Amino acid sequence: MGPMDRVQQLEQQRDDLRKQIASIKDMRRGTLRERFRRCGKPNCRCAKPGDPGHGPVWSLTWAVEGKTHTKVIPDGPAVKQTQKQIAEFRRFRDLTRQLLRVSEQLCDARLREAQAEAGATAKKGASKRRSKPKLPPRSKRS
Image 1 (cartoon, one colour):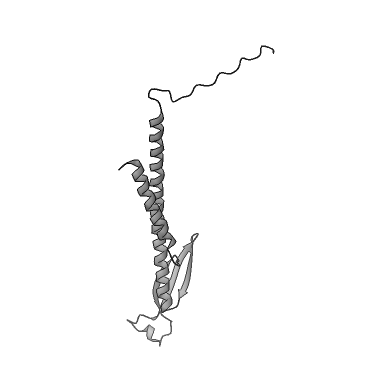
Image 2: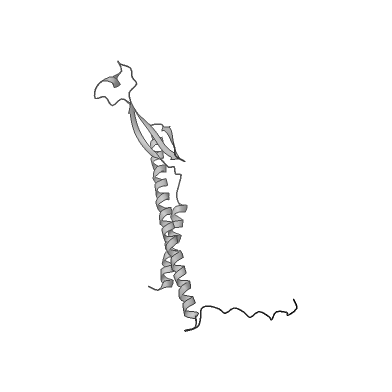
């Protein structure tokens, strides 16, 4: 495979990744956890051994600039919707990583291509260093 073929292949991969990124729906970052809690009342069913407690209560947790944020997600359809949004964010993150990798490979391939073209146009045995232009003679008046 020649350098031009490699560049075209990488451009196609880049374009495919861009299309996939453009198709991403609503997304959110974080982790969704199902939690059960005990209320603390001694006569409640949750105080009995083996009882999982009250719940489930769904918590979405994420970090921003080192600070953890938590949001309660109501049980039911909102949980499924949140799970889909988290999956879309993970897909977005994976696609952007792939896009960056392909873009870096494309940049490297284009550099190699430009270097090969420059090497082909240079004359064999010619100096790559240019000589300085001669300065006009200085005036003898001082």
